[in-house]
Amino acid sequence: MNNNKKRCNYKKLFNNTLLYIFLCLGFLIMVFPFFWMLISSIKPREELLSYPPKFYTLRPTFEYYKQLFTLVPMYRYLFNSLVVAITVTLTNLLLSSMAGYAFAKHKFYGNKLLFTIILGSMMVPWQVNIIPSFIIVKKLGWLNSFYGLIIPAMVNAFGIFLMRQIISTIPDELIDAAHIDGCSEFYIFWKIILPLSKSGLATLAIFTFMSQWNNFVWPLIIIHKSDMRTVPLSLAVLNSQFGNNFGLLMAGSTVAIVPMLLAFVFLQRYFVKGIVFTGLKE
Amino acid sequence: MKIRKFKKQLISYLFILPAFLILTIFVFIPVIASFFLSFTEYDGISPPKLVGFKNYINILFNDKLFWKAVFNTIYYVIFTVPLGIACSLVVAMALFQKIKFSTFFRTGFFLPTVTSVAAISVVWRWIYAGDRYGLLNYVLTKLGILAVLQDWLMQPSTTLPAIILMSIWGGIGYNTIILLAGLQSIPDSVFEAAKIDGATSWERFWYIILPMLKPVMIFLVIMSTINSFQVFEQVYIMASTTEYFGGVLYSALTIVPYLYERAFKRFMLGYASALAYLLFAIIFVITLIYMKISKFYEQ
Image (cartoon, rainbow over all chains, first blue to last red; front, side):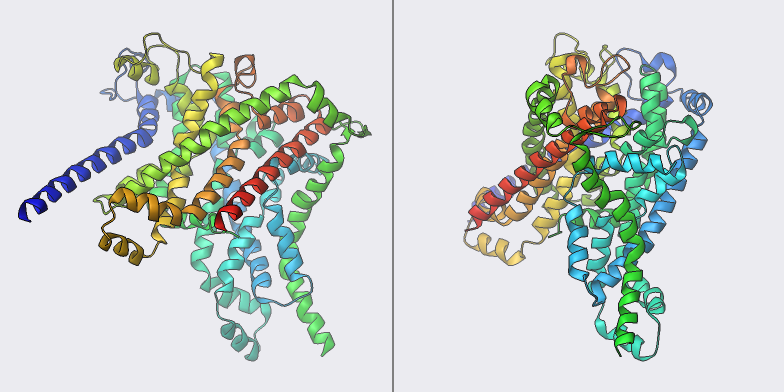
């Protein structure tokens, strides 16, 4: 009996060791590209192309970052990306929760039908509507402008769906009581619904900001002037113009990636919540 | 009374109006418009010319490049989806154990999920660099796996596999998050009952965990198939230069990059719309098949 228990312990120890070795290896594979990017962006030129490659540097340099910010108007690109991501996030929060509130709590003609149409549009791949969207934006004269980058993204079906689900969980009694007290719909929305759906709003905010910051295809299609590029688009342009200057490219990638990585490390809970939510629709 | 009810409804519509307006202009109308465009020839400048089914016929019967793209896409999907989900399942099972530093490990595995695919693709171009200081070449030659240095993204035979490897790496985070949520939703009592019955950990995995994860797995398979069919940024960044698009000899040209090239480099907007609807049809049929299969298994 005792012997058996001991063997069991050994087996457990063995299994646990295997588990940790696996996790550490996996962790290394997942994180190493990011480390490699960082270290390559601060190595001096000779070390960057040295053999064997070095996984550390004793002479860190910001040469490539200087290049990045002088060769192209990187400040401007960061500014563009920030303006677009922040504006789109704010409009998404407002418009999605407004629509979500009406769909969740109001009885009106066509509620079910309109919501089904919105849900249905989530099934359509973006390639299907990108060509007419491009034509519409072009006809409106919004190519190469913040209008073109922001207005089509002001709201999306996913956000409306998320906010509807969140607002549905708010008890009707609260809203009814406010009605009896004579509050207007807008007052109820602003003072009761929004404060009670904070966690949903946080998730939506982070998700929207992330997808806008990382958005590549839409800017690629509608931005043809240098000074309206966003960060990912400018990176793609650098990639095709300076394809072999990997120090510069790694500096650019760091600028594009690190803000999201930091945000993720601190706000992981909300990110995970949002991702899990995408898995729970239907 | 009627007026009040009408006013109340009006307010509801006001709440929906801004969102609905945006979606109508940039989603609903475009979905229908591109259907009509797919039956026309249109360069974005002169008015669209109606050509009937010509685009579809040309794509399906005269366009070798389209079939190359379809073949490449299927190749990409067949490797990315099962391998990606299998790796993620292993990772999720490992992270599901009671381990120390679990937040630390989780953060590491989830990192690629939040980063821009375009930027990540640039980083992997550097890892795949063809000379001996290319990280992958260095590691593989050091381990003795590789004798000759490979220029991963310049050789037709290795371009698409290289992109597949990166996509699997990049997808593990998302899949793992979903799988972990699925694992956490399995009631503890199920595990305890299995333990009391003396099930080994392998039996527990195979007969209890896997069947209970089935809905989540089906969802993941559908989602990652759909996403993989739409692969674009990796191909655009890693396999395109000024000289070629979608890999040397189109070795990594998949459907969406091809669509992009037709629509926004050659301005064959009608033709590209037809491509978009064909892609939509493929995705739709695959989703239906999966749904049928999952229904079949549920009975």
